[in-house]
Length: 115
Image 1 (spheres, rainbow, N blue to C red):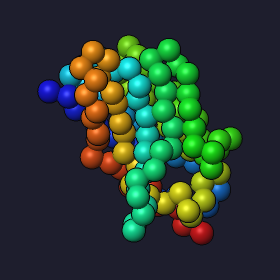
Image 2 (spheres, helix red, strand yellow):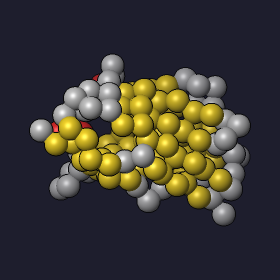
Image 3 (cartoon, one colour):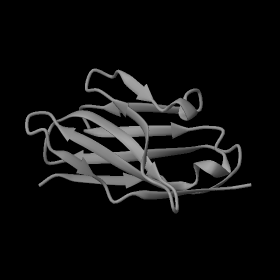
Image 4 (cartoon, rainbow, N blue to C red):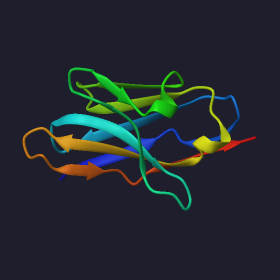
């Protein structure tokens, strides 16, 4: 059974930093990534990373967020710097099964940035 468990969210002041982690289990994953959903808005892409370590970022996150992964630990990270109040959202981990093609989601971790 596939499980994605996020951690690292919390409350931070504007300009601060947080590091999110997502520990995945139950499969081998090709693409892993982060999406976020703010209240009243649709879920949006933050960043993804391939098993080879090639990242893709949403334009508004470039330069502030860095995605990385440890394949040995089946874990993906999101380092978020210079956080802004508009970054407040629930951040969800996502993973695509390498052989099954299954699309898996974590429960999410809340990030709140105060002004």
